[in-house]
Length: 433
Image 1 (cartoon, rainbow, N blue to C red):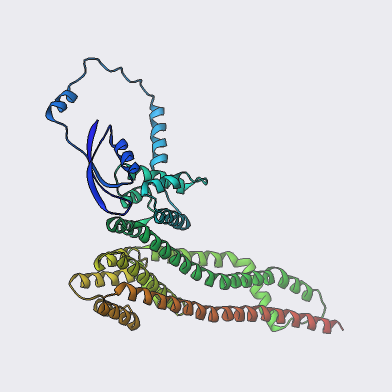
Image 2 (cartoon, rainbow, N blue to C red):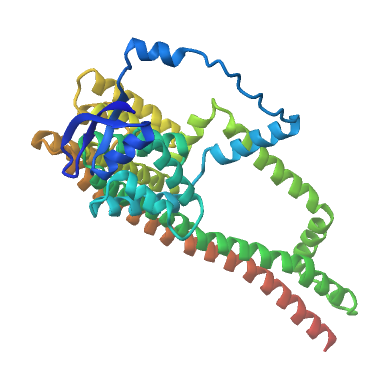
C-alpha cells in the first residue's frame, strides 16, 4: 500500500486536501471518485530510504526471457498503436454535441470523470465515444481536462481548450461549456447564412451557362442546316454572327478551356504564396459586394469571441491573443497584432482599436462605454448582436443586387439567342412562301 496526498474539489466546488492509502494511482483516483471528490493534484508520498533499498535489490531468480517477436509483428503493433492513439478529428457538429452533452451532465451534478464515462457508454459509437474514452483515461490519470482535450483531438483548438482551462480554474466548467455551445452555434449559423446567400446566384449562373451551351451545340447547328438547305433563304446578320461564334467555339473550345484553367491555376498559385496571402485578404475587404459581408462577419466573430473570453474571467490581453489565433483573415490578424501591442503597453482597448484604423466608430464607442461602466463583456455582447443585424442587412443587400442582376444577364443572353433564331426561321418561311 502507498500513501497519496491530494488536492481536490468536492461537489460544492470547494477545495479540499488530504491523504489516502491505495495500492496504485488508479485505485486512489477511484476511491476519491467514490467520495465525490474531483482531484486537481495527486502525488505519491516518498517511501523511506530503507524501503527504497529493499525495492532496489535485484531478485536472485532470473526472469524468463520474453519470446522473440518477428519483424512483421513489431510493424503491425506499431501501426495498431498509431491508429488507436492518433489524434481524432471531429466535425463542428460533433464538437458542439460533445460540449452540449458534457455541460448538461455537469449541470445535473455529475463529476467530470463519471460524466465522461456516461458519454463513453453512449449507444451510438463513433468519434465522440472514442474522444470521451481517451479524455476520461487522461483525466483519471490526473491530467487536467483542457490538457486532455488538447492531446486527444486538434478539433477543439486553442480557444476551446483555453476556455476549458478557465472553467477548471474558476470551478464553473459547466457554465463555461454552456457559453461555448452558444458561441459555436452562433458561428455555425453565421457560416450557414453566407453559404445560403451564395447558393441561388451560383445555381442561376450554372443554369444560364448550360442553356447557352445547348444553344451553341444543338440549336444553332440545326438552324444552319435548315437555312442552307432552303433555296433563296437569306441568313440575317445576327444569325450569321451566332453561327460564326458557334463554329468558332465548336472548333477552338479547348483554347478557351485551357485559358480559363491557366488563369484559375495561376491565380490560385499566386494567392497561395505566403507573401501574397495578406494582400489577397486585404483585397477581399475592398470588393464591391462581398467586402462588407467579410468585414461584418469578422466584427461579429471578434466581438462574440472577446465577450465569451472576458466574461469567463480571462484577462483582456489574453482574450485578444486567443481571438487573434481564431482570425482567418491575415490582414485583420496583423491589425489585431497592433491592438495587442498597444493594450500590452497600457492603452485602453477602445484607443487601441481607434489607432488600428480597421474598426468602425460605432464599435469603438460601444467598447468605450463598456470600459467606463466596468462591464466590457456586456458591451461586447451587445455590439456583437448589433453587428449580427448589420451582417444580415449586408447579406440581404447582396442578395437583392445579385439575384436580379444575374436574372437580367441570363434573360438578355438567352432572349437574344432566341430572337435571332426565330427571326431567321420567319425569314426562311417567308422566302419559301
